[in-house]
Image 1 (spheres, rainbow, N blue to C red):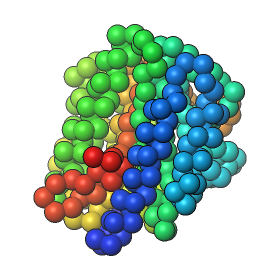
Image 2: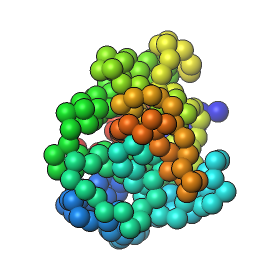
Image 3: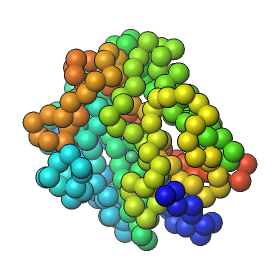
Length: 255
Ligand code: MG
């Protein structure tokens, strides 16, 4: 069941989303070759807690892993798709670093991801990054009352295919609200014009994941990190978006 949010609830979700956006601003200040992913995690957690919010991923129990997620943010580098665990790994020049941030405040969640190009990345990495980012923006453009859910899925897949990339099929976007993962699931592929009709008050976490090579992925030995089967690059962007009046309301951006 898709839960539509009231104006008051959207206001709280916007508060959560703005904290997520602030975390990214903070990360952008410190992200450079030579720092560890643990350091990013510590800065992110401190920023979240300074806003009196809670890091939503810490202690999260997924469907696949019996082990709770140990950190505040997910950091997934290069061939890692999502759910990478911060640790001693040092960020290097030329890497694609995806960071997923979730927060909870006043009973509601905000969820977003950004992929950063650290230093000089390859042409392919740059193309993959652009395509994924553009796909998210195009998908957000579909978040208008009267459209169908799969219009979002379709425009994401089309963008990937136009650039010769694939979309991850094993992980999907999701509704969000008092739970981090609510209905509906939002596939990153499929034909348009299907699924529920979008209406005011629906809040969706849309998250295209594009792979350079195969769409196939597998879970690493740490039971969390998702990696591409062919170990080629992957890229991930996500925003929490409300369907509201005439235009989509992006809750996880400051502008
Ligand atoms: Mg999400």
